[in-house]
Amino acid sequence: MLTDMVRPKRNEAELAAVAAELQAQRERDDQDVGFMGRLFTQFSLPYKDPGDDVSVWGRESGLVKITVQPGMTIDEGKPRSVGFPYGGVPRLILAHVSTEAVLTGEPRIKLGHSQSEFMRTVGLGRATGGRTGSIGRFQNQTDRLLRSTIIIDFKDPKKERSRAIKLNVASSWDLWWTSGRDRQPSLMQSTITLSNEFFREVIDHPVPVDMNVLNMLQSSPMAMDIYIWLTYRMFRLEDPYLISWPLLMLQFGSNLADTKQGRFQFKRDFNKHLEAVRVFYPELRVKVDLKAGLTLYPSDPHVLKRPARRLRALPGPTERDTSLGAG
Image 1 (cartoon, rainbow, N blue to C red):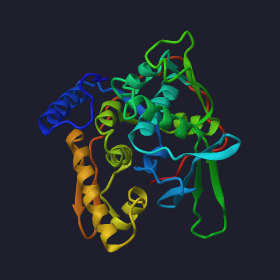
Image 2: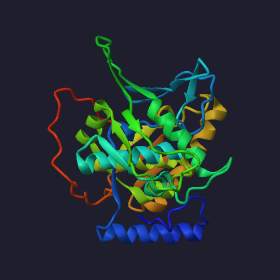
Image 3: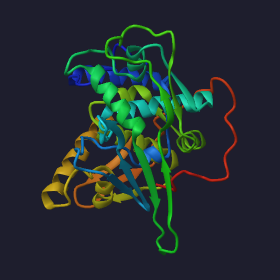
Image 4: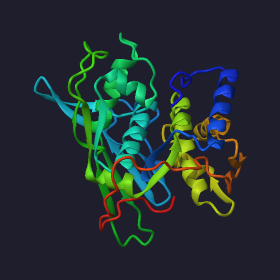
């Protein structure tokens, strides 16, 4: 991982230099390859905080509808929502734990002996304290992600069947992190144990991504989602395929109202983040039509080589396939 180079909010010259280095790595088959479950190539998390007044947040992709519910805790005897996970931090955490699951074949993910070590590992750079520092934000987003619940509804065009999957990212976690000891190594490693549903989705249907690209896009969560989605689509695409703006907005633009102004804003935002993705994926062949939508053309996959698993062979598939259908 380009730990010294990967930082958000760089100028154009710096971005071009990093993009050139990542492209050189790709051509040398030396990418920092990670994985996301196929489910998370077609949906993700909010870009911004939906707020405490919202109890459910969702998106749609084809015949699949995703809803996210925030976790709850008890504060001074009263139930309280911990809030929705949102932005780039939970996406980086998801990419890291998914990658570790694929490479080790184990649902128990080791996070290291200190919070700052784990933050560096996922690409967040140097841990900083204070009210606006990265440590508090990281702890908060980690807690929100681990406590949230995801429900995937599969639509039946004939309306003869109701099918859904309910999952949490983790079934348990043990984090030796406190605000007073963020840089001090603990004798015990922090761990997250993935839920069986999440673990099976990731190891049965892994989609390779370049972790350095995700790190470079972390300040733009929509760009992260577009990159992951297009990386998956280009592995499977054989013919040109047009996706309309309404469908794109259902998948990527649920923070905006379905109004003339909202649709205009979505097109502008989508194009801006698509251009950020193309900086790091120059082989990507797409055409934007402001009336019709986005046409995808068969392109070279962005990740050219998959790394070997680290420890042992993955367990065999279960009877139930918990993945999404074609997206």
